[in-house]
Image (tube, rainbow, N blue to C red; front, side):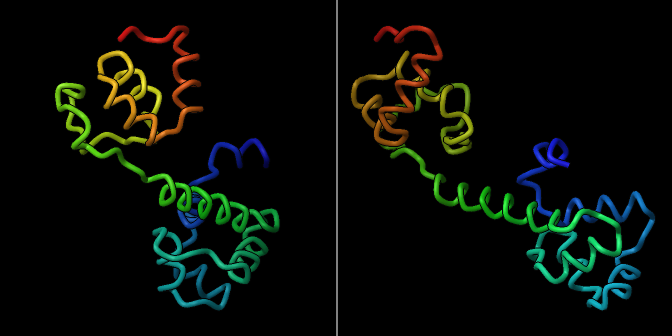
Length: 157
């Protein structure tokens, strides 16, 4: 289970439940009746619009023969991922970055956290000191040093 879990962690447990129900050819309404829950609740969970709670998870796991705690572990990983997205949804002050740095894309559409290394390298290769300072403020000196070290050498200014 741990290998499987490492592949799916961060995915809402309801989406995994929905997939499992489809594989077993069980309708959401049938599941709701069997676990004494409202069909709307099961529907909301499988669409990722509602959290999986412990009582519901235990009932579903028991009914489907899934290891106890599986859905709650997924819920915790999903909650962590969502918290990180909120916490790290930082963006640079775009007024401090020239549009020419990101000529090939819209700066507003950049995923600043997932493309951190690429952004750091772009700014440290082509940016001026003010732009580099803004990116260092955003990511921190350690992240900048790590990205530059991974690149192999410090880009020329």
